[in-house]
Amino acid sequence: IVACELLEFSVDRAPPYVALSYVWGDSALRKPIFVGTKQLQVTENLESALNHFAEDDKTVIIWVDALCINQSDDVEKGVQVNRMGGIYRSAAAVLVWLGPAADESDLAL
Image (cartoon, one colour):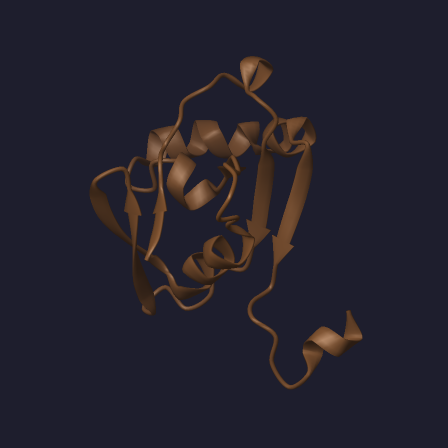
């Protein structure tokens, strides 16, 4: 199971981080992850991306909209969505996740 921590920084004072751009996938297909001690259900595709980009021997700071924006608060969501351009521009890198390889799609890339 993916285990991570939620850290809070202002964009202008954040340590180097990567932003994850991904396809949410079927919202009905959920997998558990741990954020601190709390278990959350995230889309299967997000769980797959977090597993794929995790590195056992070092800390990776990843900004992920589904975890960094309170999805149940429409007011906060509206404010944060307007900030996403700056969040992606300020990232050290942007990772793109379309999903696990299928039908030899990894050969095309």
